[in-house]
Amino acid sequence: MNEVKSAKDLPACPVETTLTLIGDKWKVLILRDLLPGTKRFGELKKSIGSVSQKVLTSQLRDMEESGLLTRTVYAEVPPRVEYSLTPLGQSLRPILDAMGSWGEEYKASLN
Image 1 (cartoon, helix red, strand yellow):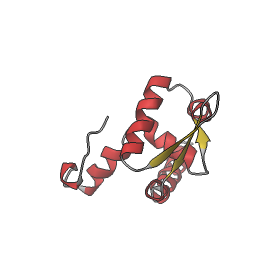
Image 2 (image 1 turned 60 degrees about the horizontal axis):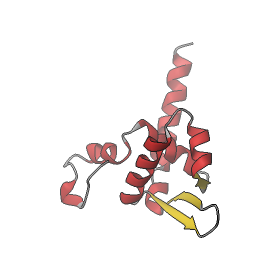
Image 3 (image 1 turned 60 degrees about the vertical axis):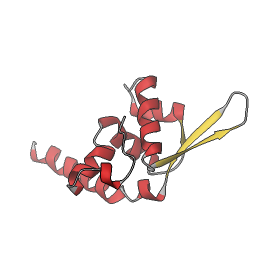
Image 4 (image 1 turned 30 degrees about the vertical axis):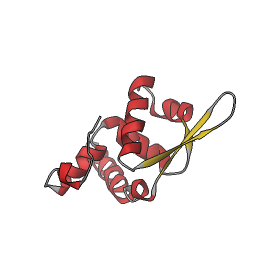
């Protein structure tokens, strides 16, 4: 988990700062899956695929601490937990869109 407490704990390079926050494979996939809207833990796990429950939980907590998503727990039995992107998390949409476009162009160039 990242231990970023304040701006002074972040790298001087803005690209490195971004990678510090979303550089994990799973974090990018979590962002991708939450861009359309709120999801429950099980929905995220199913849509991401081969991530373990432990790793997904760790990544979600890290992203919550970084201010990229919110976790809402409902007092129900069984407990219901939902995750959604904060405005800060939503602001990463153009980056993910650009990554998606680049990936499509790369795959097309291989044909």
